[in-house]
Image 1 (cartoon, helix red, strand yellow):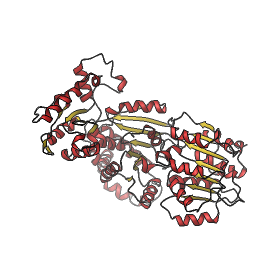
Image 2: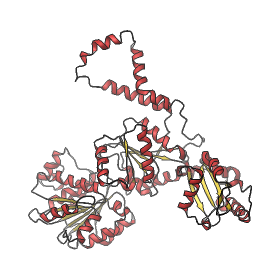
Image 3: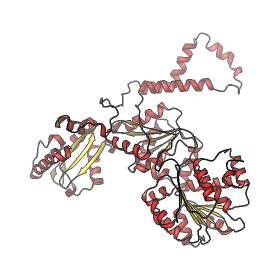
Image 4: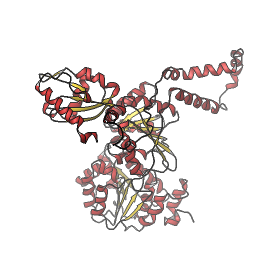
Length: 578
């Protein structure tokens, strides 16, 4: 008996799965399908992306549908257009040997009138994004009264995107449903609240551990000064010439800027961000899926719902602010049994985040070095040689040209030919990396996390202060401007960056108070910022900026003296030293 047939699937669905080349179900499929086939049991499935969740709920749905009743019987709600289309395509594939079952994908960015016309023809399964579904409900273009099965796919993603009210609305309007199936990669409190409010003693299945990472993913990180992030990224790409990956940034501005710099340097990369129209987004994704693009750079919002096979690397240009987002980022690689690498570019102040992530996903992160210039060139050279040796010369009339080639190179040795080939192919790499600096931190601490810094009782006060401010790559600056000067954090950040003409990447933590503020800045940029800002006039007052442990050298007014006193109290307070 076929392994899928043993789960209770009918002959038609088993045939479809066999046609796809699947012999054995994945863990989530094996645990979910027998439960879901009952049609009356609420279900929670916790599993990472790429584990076969669509088949886990799609196959039972197709078997439960009554093809003779041409009205919506099942509703699948998912966060993005891409995932909506992917689920619909998978259902079409699964049902090719079954009786005629109609599916319809409804999502924003496409003609709503066309979707309404298709719904009026009669469909059995509706796959929808929350926004478009609410729109259709309000237009009375879709009747949910006879929906028996509701599936919430990527529930945590939908909640992260702010769809909580939409999900509540949908569940309140499917009052005759017989079961609710919820699938999620993580189980935050908001997802748990949905299960409490709308599900009746659900059967819960966890594949792996809650919030755990895919076992096929190698989690790595490098530590570099903030101003070397881009150069480190470029080296990582060059050191992995076969990379097919996604690079994540926090903001769309960073995605655009990094993409622009890499494009100008000759890399096949495009950015995916919120400013793209749906048509532009589809075009970018089409090129990426067809591998005409080697790299895609995206924000978390723009990348939601992307499901592309064969991704070898996920690179975090910056770690996410929300640690659970890391699970979704890393889950883009290591899919369908393949291995993948998730590599994060960090500065030393983010070491604690790595430790937190290790605890959250129950996996060890491996610290790796940024490749040297020579290592990059060597890796590229041997990659090219492998391609050269594997080149297919069986097609094409190469023999026609051989006599001329032999004559041309009659007086040239094989070694010289190879040298000339290498020169043509690698001259740009050799020039670029000829005097490349070592980007790895040489602070003799190795991979030390915050807990590795030693007992607070050891070492002098001066040594501890020096470690906190300079050995971590940052200098702490004191400035006599604060919130009473009309600043909030964003406007203050804009002010100091505009005045110093520096990039925000060089900044660390900003601590604003009423009368003054403290700014962490990369050691290499501290002097530039002080020189640019110290002595400037703001609101008819002299602005003072110095290293925090140096105090003010030239307080010219009463405000300056109070700033200095407040600054010293703040800097040398026992609580902060701890």
